[in-house]
Length: 191
Length: 295
Image (cartoon, rainbow over all chains, first blue to last red; front, side, top):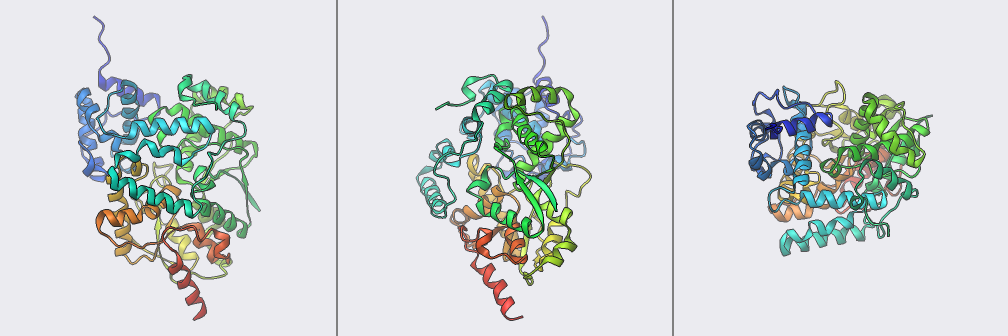
């Protein structure tokens, strides 16, 4: 029987394809974990996660919230003595987990990312109010009220657009996107 | 007069309009010409990378092509737009296959990118192209020792672009000193504000923003100067919620560095978008005016 590429191979290859450095050079020094500003909220430290990938612990890696908690601040990247693009590795795992529809229950990242991209592809520019339903109901009643209060403050200061902005050559823009992402449901509504 | 192709980015249309206004006003007073890209689109932000990096690069490439059409280097005031445009530019210059693929897509909008321009962040243009000495000469109203915490955030400094200083950059401080302000030294000046975790992992983001605010307060800052719309929103618009969450009493104005620069160059607060703050900047303005009056 042909051997399937391991999980480690898959992640490494995805990183190669998107200009990331390989993770094979990791010396498990933990500089990334010591640097990460979000580490206390992660199930596993970045160092752990690299070790887990190399040990092919696919299900454990995907079940960890770590990669969806990466804020891509690139602090680990610039300090890594092996020059591993750790933030890109986290993005790679995000992509992989969306493709496999396999990520920890309760993480909001996948829905947020998809909502965001659909929003941009429908008008060409960002329109913050569209994002609200992707998260606002997950903070409980107090969180909901606080968020409404913040939004009201912003609206009163004229900082929230009333209508979604649209670029002029939207049809060209959509065809351009269609060239690289030939998936119609990502390209958004043509209303 | 030096000219740049100006890519404001989505936030500056409304949420960060004061950044847009103060960037243009400061540029005008420093004899820079900023020509806005015609029909620019979203840069891709951080959300795209989780979906598809090629898509992200294509969106940035369209903006690069629009700038190249003007035969001008690009300047972006938003740290996120800057980082995405910068690295897309690097990839397109070094990866012929990627460039060919993306140029095929750009044809749909009659565009082509050949890789002839550079990408800069607004902070770099003021600090390097105009220069600290020139700004000193142009200062019409010194900020008279106002204690300003320069907040670099992430994407301007990282990932590493070349051989620049990533642990302790100083050009933001130098720029503030040129305006007569006193830059505050604080450890977290290049730490993350929480970014889009504010939406997806709120507890983590609030904690990160709280640490930043606390660090600036502990070191005597009267105001934090930002160079990124997302940092500004996280630190300012959510300051009240952060106070509630941690039982804190932060009342820290968060201004765009161009608003402070513009004041120093003699612009009126109204020309710089003052008045749309959720945390009042009155203390900053009165401090400058008081010093001015007592001179």
